[in-house]
Image 1 (cartoon, chains in turn brown, blue):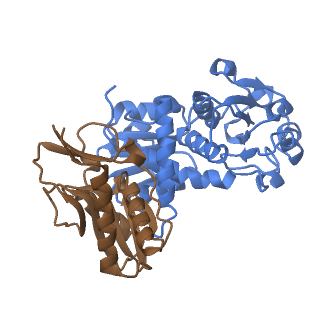
Image 2: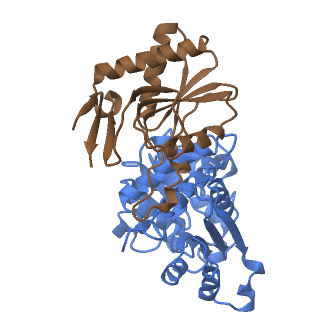
Image 3: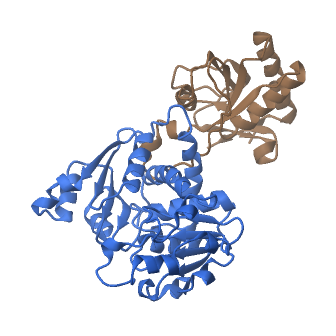
Length: 177
Length: 306
């Protein structure tokens, strides 16, 4: 199981993304970070901390659960419904520039669901996408604006992101299935 | 989850908690500017109500619409029941139009079980006679947990017409499964035998039931189900078993007062208690929508094999 990103590499990637965001936006007053559950949420918080450390300004963060917007929900051959968790966006997204944060970008279907979910909360000025890993194989016309690492993979492989907040360690690994 | 939700017995303890956790997420949807998610798009839900109901029927309809299901409610008075059609025939005719779920309220205990045997659609029991009302018990558990943070170890006193109450039966099953200390109190004519076999303390003393209770749940005197003389008079009933401010004072200082509705003010509960600071009766109604959304969502998945 090759590790393709360790803790140090991950933290440098996030720091770089924070700089890129600030380079593009200068002011961060109308910026907000929304993490997609589960692992997008701690990543969004880390980016908010990184931006605050550089720029001395706080950026609002929220958590989005996209389960109820999935396009495969009622198509499962077997199995129970996926667990729904709380969406927590404690601010108005109207006229904000929203940075949507997720761990892995793959088919793009999660992001499609997240865009639908987010739009229900208001009309942001813009939505951009931040991902830690882009593993390719898109099935929808979706592209990330900020990428931690581009990771060419085959369809038989799976990418696993581990984060300290949830898994006790920072690491990205590829597995053969 | 099983195919149908006919009673609390269809759920394991873990599944009860899954419903409560899912309802937490569903409640947030009701606080959004657009109170709707696309989850059950293209699913058809038929609400078949053979008994009058305001709260439960409205609550299911709101829950179904918030999940984007196509929903229709069969108004019984205008339906072919009056022309002599049986429940089974009505159900089979509705079934022929291929709905995904049927929400059934019926005056006969076990009506849901009959539909469950003859229908492919998922059946949700919204109250069957004197048997069960599982979504009410789930929303009660949700409301208790919201206020107390837990259910295990709490003293819950359920007071009133125990005999005719499907709310009692469902609550006894869920609350004992979740580890509450359940007390049931009513006049001896309205206490069903065998409550102790469910681990419930039955008593005819309201003071004993209310003493140090964390939760007091009042049940309605169901005059429409009483064909005998169960209580001498409603006034005497209120004097002996009605919830008054003086009786509330015997419970824990942070007690919550619940009622599944509709209330008979001045019969089982005094108005100043129903509208007072301990009352969570309207919160129960609000939580009912979130809990029913959770049930509809969880049942819409693939059923486990029996």
